[in-house]
Image (cartoon, rainbow, N blue to C red; front, side, top):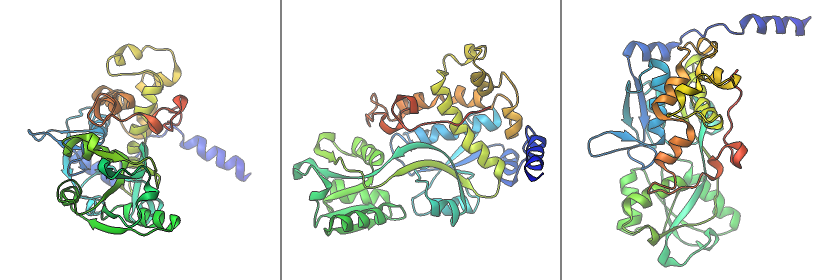
Length: 338
């Protein structure tokens, strides 16, 4: 009887429109999305000389705005430090945190955050001057290592050196500009540690010759990067999650910015559900049925976003690696959207 009742309740709820929560109501009333981003990390979120922001994290915010408003320009970017980013979400200063942030249990629970789809699989590593002639992190005994406070870097480094039975000298700095200066300019530290994507970004933008610096092969942590919102508005966190999944699903199904319109007539049921040709998903999220169509139209699919911002044709020159689709040897995978 209990099982039958559960099925009946689920069947009765299925397909009902989501009710707007506090955060989504505030965003709609304001008429724009406020998105917390980095203070400037090439390829992820950085302003140009005109103050125009670009990068993977920025594109995700544009996709969110397009899904909610049908207009990707309805977003304001607020630069946040690693130290103050979580407070900004908790206080409502920003609606979405899209800032190379690692999804962890503690952040998901005690910090009161809801994370979306993992949009970049990364890992913490080490960067050294090539002139040191070091090829392995295991040879860094006694080195002075620069790292940013307010991140998972400090604990990860301590755990790594403890595991190999060697010592190191930490130099923890909050301000990212001071941190970069300590490594690239004043040489106050021998080694830079951080997410490998971030180190590649700093190397591409700050080193006069990228070949002067080597990112060592070891990864000492798992760093799944995802956008986050304040806990308490289930509908808004659903939108956050499914916008990310839609961008991944679009790549898997071959839906791009350029073929988006013609794909609306594709007979594949999953494509029809994704693009709103068959209604239902929009209603379930409390959005227009063209929510995913609008997001893809604004920024392209996940692969297009990756290649435009951090791929082989950019200064960062990153391979897809773990960030390839699941059916191409990577980890990216979107749940069924119907």
